[in-house]
Structures are given as C-alpha cells and as structure tokens.
Length: 116
Length: 117
Image 1 (cartoon, each protein chain N blue to C red):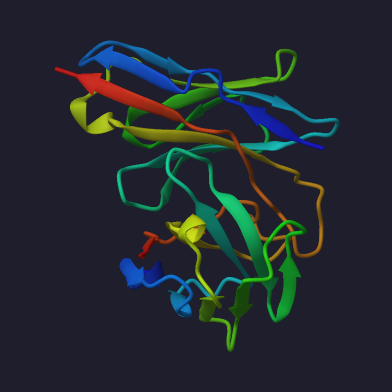
Image 2: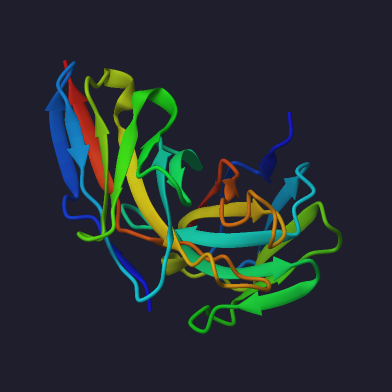
C-alpha cells in the first residue's frame, strides 16, 4: 500500500546531541511537510518542500533543518535539541497543485522525540 | 488570515450516545475544510473533507459533518459512538486558491473525545 513512513517511531536523545528523523513516502507526492506537535496541542508546521524548493515557516527556530535528497525521502535534523524540543514530529505529503487530492495531506505515524 | 476554533477541548460521552464536535472557522475567502482524527501516539488520519458541492459530507467510521457557510461552521457528528472512537479530533482549513507550493492546513487546537462504557 502507498503510504508515508516515519523512522524511528520513538527516538531518545540527549540534550544538545544532534538527531535526525526520517520520512519516506511511496505516494510520489511533490510536497512534503514537517510538523511539530507538543502534548495536547495542534500540529505546528515547521517547513515544507515543494519538490526541491524549501519553504521555512517564519517562526521555525534555526535549530531545525531539513533535507530532501529525492522525491521519496525527507529528513528533519535538530542540531542541538533542547528539552523544549521534546514532541511528536509528523511528516505529511500532498500531491501537486491541480491534483484532485491537492490540499489533502497524508500523514505518517509520527516520531516521538524524548530529550534527556 | 484564516483561523479555526474548536470550542470544546474535551467532550466526554457515553457509549452509543450521539456526539457533536464543534468547529468554526474564519476566512475572507472560500475554504476547504477537513476533520482529522488522532489516536494516541499515532499520526493524523483523515475522517472527511469538504471541498465543494453538497454541504453534508460523510466520512469514515460513521462520522459526518455539515458545512454551514452563513455560520462559518463545520461541526462533526456521529449518531452513536463506540469506545474505539476515543481519540483527539482536529478541524482544519486550507485555502483552495493558494497556488504554487502551499496548500497549508490551519489546524484548530483539537477536541479530545472520551467515550465511556
């Protein structure tokens, strides 16, 4: 089945130790998103890629970076995680503008990050 | 700018009772509307969406929602809930006329539905 996959599902890191979260998709969608979701809050968009074009949200901290080496994969790098970065990180995809599915986002299961 | 308000942060209900989760939006342009469900430690799953056409939208798991343009609402309903419906529900809006690379979703803060036996 076509889907959005996130690895790992649970990640524990130490304060200040860089960590990378992975997202892959078999949907062949052009757009990929990264969201941060803290406990009992709505998902907050960090950034997204339209193909290789990177779009950063204005309030996303510099500590968060992303890479998209190809259509299928997208990575979230947290350069120096702080305690406040502990959250669920959600990856989502959507097809290109003009598709009948445009504006519908398909979410992965998320990676729960714990910072010790 | 668009915004979404989910009026109830928590809704407790007994099994087999009906439920309505409220969602109001604010937008100066036409919108697409969505309801997503999130089970504990899971991603978001689309329940239903309104893009155009009939204002009554049916989704998965027996849920439905009605788009009311005059009241700028998109309330989610289910006539009889099950224990397995216990989850958090997010209403979201996006701008269908936003071309190019962004069809960003604006989420409400979520409503936790708790179904008790």
